[in-house]
Image (tube, rainbow, N blue to C red; front, side, top):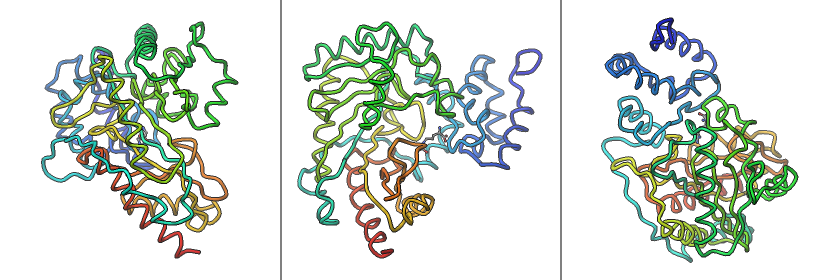
Amino acid sequence: LDDQGNVDYIKIQARWEEFKKNKVSLANKHFTQQVVEKAKTLSQEDQQRLLDIMIEGLTYNDSSVGIAATRPEDYDLFLFYLEPLIREYHKIEGQTKQEHDWNIPVGEYVLTNIDPKLEKVSMRARVARNVVGYSLPSSMDKDERIKFENQMVEVFEKFGFPGKYHSLTPGHKNFISDQEADVLRNKHFLFINMTHDNCLMSNGVASDWPYGRGIWISEDETKMVWVGEEDHLRIISIVQGNDLGKVDQSLNELLTGIEKSGLKFAEHPTYGIITTCPTNMGTGKRQSILGKFPNITKGGKDEANLKNIAKSLGLQARGIGGEHSNMDSEGTADISPSARFGVTEAIVTKRLYEGLIKLYEIERNEA
Ligand code: CIR
């Protein structure tokens, strides 16, 4: 902001230019002169909101996207900026309206058909959801975070699945210590301490840590719900096995159970499920397996090779501890399709399966 408290576009554009020397985030790339001209026609309050949604990209020079929505309405008001960015990330040309389809066959996407070694694999699927009536996590204050967590505790108490809620909020009746939280992190159930993530720190998503944060876990440890991470809810299923359809079935049961409790999720008529990060818009669904790629990664030393090959197949490879984590010496990586918008839930599973066929073929050829 300038001395009068107005948004200073010259300064913003200078910062974007400086950041281009390091990395061009999508937030940076799409902040064109046309966007600036359009932004100037908005009210001062809305211009500051626009600044808020790209503050991550403007403060942290290593973002690949650099955007965090602050309210569901941002995807209407700032669509002139966000639309081309969403289309680029999800590789959509022309107009697409989000459709949903959870009709995912069991017995069709079987990993042992790709490679007999894939008998018992950690398979994960999640959907992101945000609840109508609350700000998105980047602009919630501490009271709102706590209020939301308490509303979720009530849902968990009556939604019918046997399990337990664990809260990171100091003084909460379900509070767990750091040590107990680390046990859950080692099992890959719980998210990391968000203050260790530069993206989440710079966009406000990690603010008021650890208030309003926690995880519900089913008794059999196959279903879980993150509360207060990058989206209000991340609804997750983790199944050990080889049939991708089984994890979808489990996730869909949990999602339906939560929907029946009366929560209303934010949804856009064109862009589908509304999420903090534009990369999750559409289905909000990410589905992955943990696989070993010792040849492609050259014993874990060349993670970039796996990331690049995965990218060329429309997949994303991450380390085992989440988005910005490392792989081990066996090249163990979490592989998921990148697109979540313009595909249905069923297509996300299909893309994972078809991408894995090619990826394992490359892994075998590099032996
Ligand atoms: C970034 O902009 O680098 C982070 N906020 C994370 C981006 C979202 N994830 C992704 O590329 N799949």
